[in-house]
Amino acid sequence: MSTDTVRTGAADEAAGLLREQRGWYVYDWACSVYSTSVLTVFLGPYLTSVAEHAADGDGYVHPLGIPVRAGSFFAYSVSLSVIVAVVLMPLAGSAADRTGRKKPLLAAAAYTGAAATTAMFFLDGDRYLLGGVLLVVANAAQSVGMMLYNSYLPQIAPPEQRDAVSSRGWAFGYAAGSLVLVADLVLYSAHDSFGLSETAAVRVCLASAGLWWGAFTLVPLRRLRDRRTRVAHATATAPGLRQLAATVRDMRRHPLTLAFLLAYLVYNDGIQTVITQASVYGSEELGLGQSTLIGAVLLVQVLAVAGALAMGRLARTYGARRTILGSLVAWTLTLAAGWFLPARAPVWFFALAAGIGLVLGGSQALSRSLFSHLVPPGKEAEYFSAYEMSDRGMSWLGPLLFGVTYQLTGSYRSAIFSLVAFFVLGFVLLARVPVRRAIAEAGNPVPERI
Image (cartoon, rainbow, N blue to C red):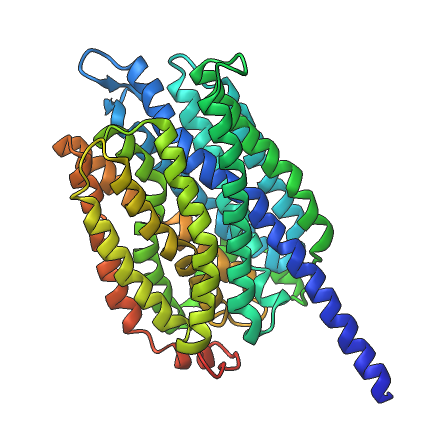
C-alpha cells in the first residue's frame, strides 16, 4: 500500500470523525432545552402550583392514596423518574453493545421524551398527576438517550481530543438553552401581547421544548454511524436481565472504574439536585418572580458555555482530575452561600447563579471525558449506562433528601443547605482515585496529562 493511499485513508477517517463530532454536538443542542426550560425553570414552580391547587386544606395531595405535601410533589416525581431510568438504562446499554445499533435506540428514547414534553401543554387546572406521569416519562427517556449519546464519545474522539470534544458538546447544549430561554422570557413577560394567559404561556414554553428536542434530533441521527460489534451468538441472544448481570460482574473486574463512578455518583447527585430544585428555592423561599428566575437561569446558561470551554483549557494544563476537584470546592462554597441569600433580592440570586454557571458545564464535561478513558474497549454503552445511572439514574438521593428535609422542616433553606454534603464527600472520594492506574487497568493508553 502506497504512502499516498495511507495518507488519503487517514484523512478520510479524520474527516468522517469530524462530521460525526459535529452531529454529536447537535444532540446536546437538541435535548438540553428540556433540561433548561422544562426541568430547571418552568416545570418545578408550575407543577408545584398545580399540586397546591389540587391540595386539601392541610396542603397535601394524595397520589395513589399516599399523603404528600404539595411542595414536595415535584421533588418526589424527579426521584421516581430516575428510579425508572435505573431499570431501563442497563438494558438499553447492553442491547446497544450486543447489536452495535445505537441509533434506533437513541431515536426511540429521544422521541419518547420529546412527545411527553410536548404533551405538557395539556397540564393545567388540578392535573398534577398528569404532570407527574409526563415528568417521569420525559426524564427517564432523556436519561436513556443521554447514556447512548455519551457512549459515542470514545468512538468519535481519540484520547487526546476527548476533553475538548466533551466540553464543546456541553457548550452547544448551554448555548441552545440560552437561545430558547431568551425566546421563553419574551413570551412569558409579554404574554398579554400574544393573547395568552400566564399559565398558557408557561404551557407553550414547556411544549416548545419538546418540539425543539424532536426537530434537532434528526441531525445526529443522520451523521452518527453505528459500529457493528463482534459478539458470540449466545451473548447476542441472551435476555436483557442476563446481560445486565453480566455487565455488573464485568464492572467488578475494574474496581478503580467503580471507585470513580462512586465519587461521581455522590457529587453529581448534588449537581443534578441543584439544577432541578434551584427554581423552586428561588420562587418559594426567596419570593422571586418567574421573570427573575428565567433571567437567572439564562445567566447560568451563558456563563456555562464560557465555563465549559475555560475548564477544558484548564484541563490541558492541570489535568481533568485536578480541574474537577477545583470545581467541587467552588460548588461547595457557592452552595453554602445560598443559605444566606436574603429574600426578594434578585441581585444576590443572580450572583449565586453566576457562581453556579462558571463551574456547571466544565465539571460535567470533564467528568464525562475522564470516564471515557476508564471504559474497557467494546463496552462503551454498557459502562456509560452505569455512568448515566450515576449522572441521572442514581441521582434520586438528592431530590429525595431535598423533599424530605422540606417536609420535615418546612424550610427550603435547610433543604438547599443539605446538598453541601454531596460535594464535600464527592471531593474526598475522587481525590482517592488513582486515575492513571485506573486507565491502564481498563486497557486504554494513558494520556500524557490526565
